Length: 94
Image (cartoon, rainbow, N blue to C red; front, side, top):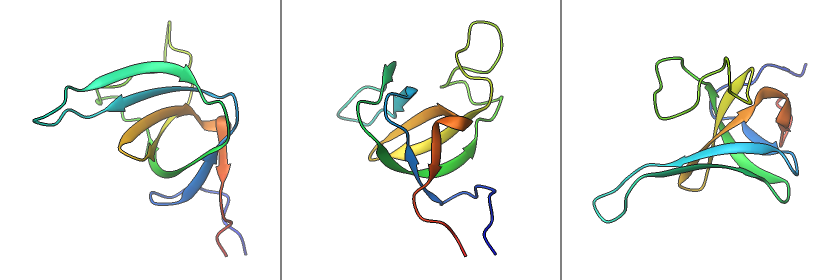
């Protein structure tokens, strides 16, 4: 039986031309950075869960936000915020 519910740690693929907001955490040698942009090609990542309302590093849903149901996805050393309909399972779980 296949589960259609995403769980933290699931490998997912962000759809081509999806709008994402990304945040790169700061380190001692580099400053934190963030911005909106469009993904030019399908991109694999790790699902980190729905965006927590208390997470101030990311835009929250509501007036002025392009995301109604934002989710966090790790891609390399960046954390992307993506609309829940803009990604799918990379590999289906059994």
